[in-house]
Amino acid sequence: MTMKKLTIFLSILFIILSSFLMNSRLKSGIRGSIEPAEGGRRIWAISGTDSISTAPIMGKFSLDVRAGNWKLWIEAVQPYKNTSVESVLVVDGEYTDAGVIKLPN
Image (cartoon, rainbow, N blue to C red; front, side):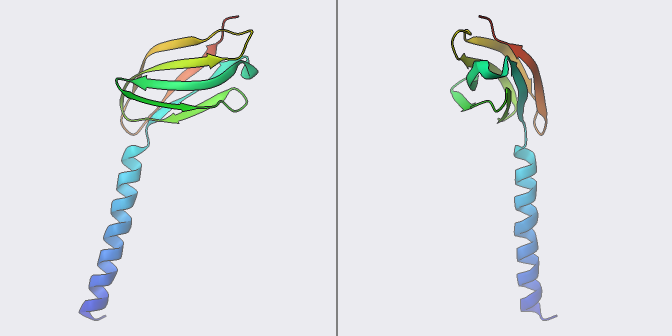
């Protein structure tokens, strides 16, 4: 193998490994479900000035977030009422299970 081919090969390998390592470090978040499944319109995760939201699918949700302390805010469909879950701790590289969140009516 020539030096030029070896350099190109090693450069491509470095890019692939760097991309893999960056993506694996970002994989942390919050998962859970809402009851009743049809009662949730939108799930918000809020931490300081950061926020992200998703629509639940069949009552289940998953949010990719950075490590830290998060608050979940569940926007409900009537006759159910909005509710929140405080202090959801997310560790870097892991998903936190928020469990089943029951919506009041």
